[in-house]
Image (cartoon, rainbow, N blue to C red; front, top):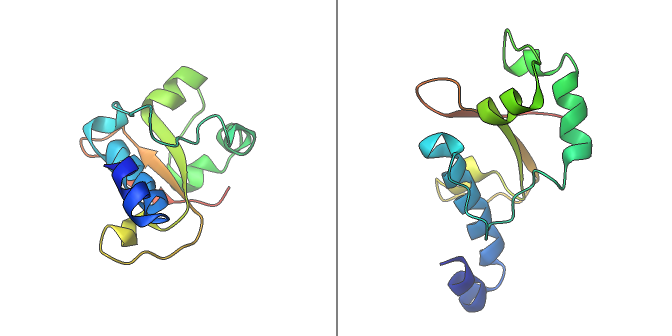
Length: 116
């Protein structure tokens, strides 16, 4: 679907990739992450690692305590998007970099915009 949108619509492929990544993270506790999507985990590690080791996660996740990297990766995820995917899902494709923090610890996945 992503490749078709890229061939047929050009820049729509970027939007579709963003929406598919958002959908993958919101579904099934973020466990299924298709390899063909443009994931940011390695690309932005220089920004996300200092965030997790600082006091800033507590602003977004009250009671957060850094235990180890495995625990962080299993419970939370930070993803960078080229647009506000929450609005794009409603039909408003606002092009601006948006950084979302996904929380997989509750019964439902939640996400919120953060500042790194």
